[in-house]
Image 1 (tube, rainbow, N blue to C red):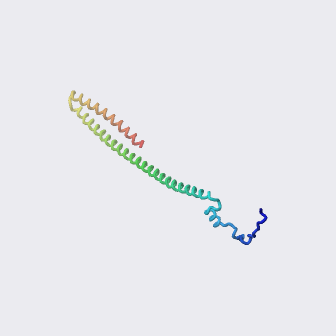
Image 2: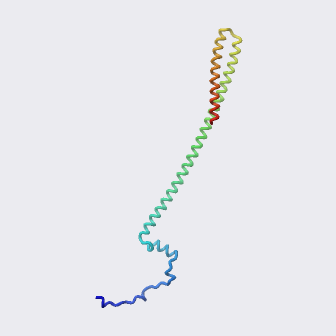
Image 3: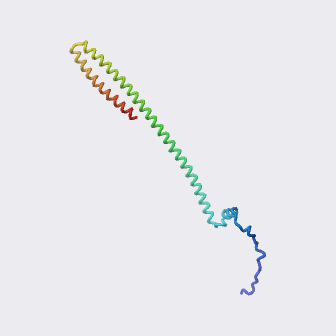
Length: 157
């Protein structure tokens, strides 16, 4: 069956490359990889997956930067609010302290007038004046306690 075949000498038809042309340089390697001849057709899927991974990393990096900036702004706003509250509280305690001091001074002034009245008026009126004086002393003690509490509150700020 194979006795009739003739062998054809194809050695002259084959393209013979010189050893310099057969060496692989970087440009040829990159070209072979990108055309798919070096790794085969599955390399395209690897390139696609790598591309999707890079896109995902880029988007997630942008989102993380946005989130950090948002948290930083939130902390700055919270710090400003805390400072504003502290200032308002200090102003309120200062106003209360000033008002309580004015009330205290007024009570002392009224007490001085009552002591003068006790010297001048009769026994019946002296009893009323003594009762008023007792009430003013109670009010004065309460004002002293209030002023002490305000002083402690100012120290804690």
